[in-house]
Length: 425
Image 1 (cartoon, rainbow, N blue to C red):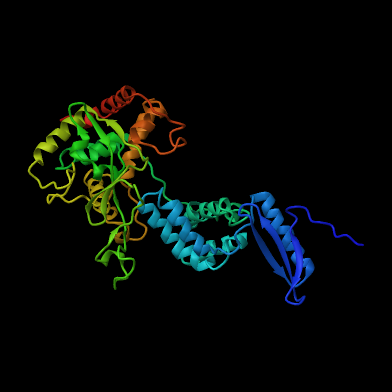
Image 2 (cartoon, helix red, strand yellow):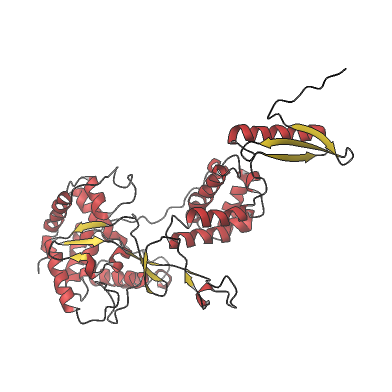
């Protein structure tokens, strides 16, 4: 009698189906306890698929999901990984990238079968649309690669193919810099004569981001101790349908039951429409010591504007109490630079309004860089610089960590002395 060799556990099996027209490979997935099968027209093909299944089980603890498409995973990744962790504006940006570049190009492909050539197809789609290589870099590094890395961890693919593809060389772009000492002096002196000049003093002397300045509230300002508690940043949050897509409107903003698109537990304060206060970029509240001349100027500013409408309790606002919008703030900055003789009249309009070839003017972020640059030039420890300006990553300030507020105060006093000539009342 011929005895059949019993297969060891995990070896799987091969057998014919459909009257011998197909071969089926079957193995039990240890992660689910359920059998997984693949078919082929030949025994050799079925055996190869069986070997591949067993390899996946050895390397990943279970068989890979070969049914999920890139579009399907993109939606899942955005909803379960990105939305709960990122700011609504970042989530919205990532959604646009998935919807505009990734899904139309490779959305129907299975995540498990993606190849490096598919990644290059996405790069080409972005470039063929006339976008720069910096856009390709954002699509690749900010969205595609993290999305596929999460898919790998979820067992949807054996590897992150985006990690194996080089991003096209980035074209030279304008780098943000810092104002020179002479320029900063002129800007501070010019701002001193403006009604809301303290907004620009705070930009240069406190290292606030634009959103942090526009979100600064009177209750966050401690005049007695000369500090500003940076708790919020102004941001726009998109709307989503609250009607479960049953209304007649395509735009979520027109939905009668519209709601802000925020994850559960996300902290925000709605001001007007999509304008909201959200936590700073670093994700944590920080306390910034203010130089004495700025404290005095802020006290005067609050007194001069105390009768102005202020439904949101903002330090800097329009005469009707509404918040400054980012593009309005940027225009006011360029106007200030022109008044101070830093840029020409031709450089003051927004980008689309400038003549071709007009030099790019410094944006308002240069003011924040000026703070950090001056602090570093004065010999202040990078750890303290990081605390003051609220850097997000350790790399940004060479591994900064929490430092004492006394050290930060001493550092900012140096800045006050540095700009003393420009801050005289």
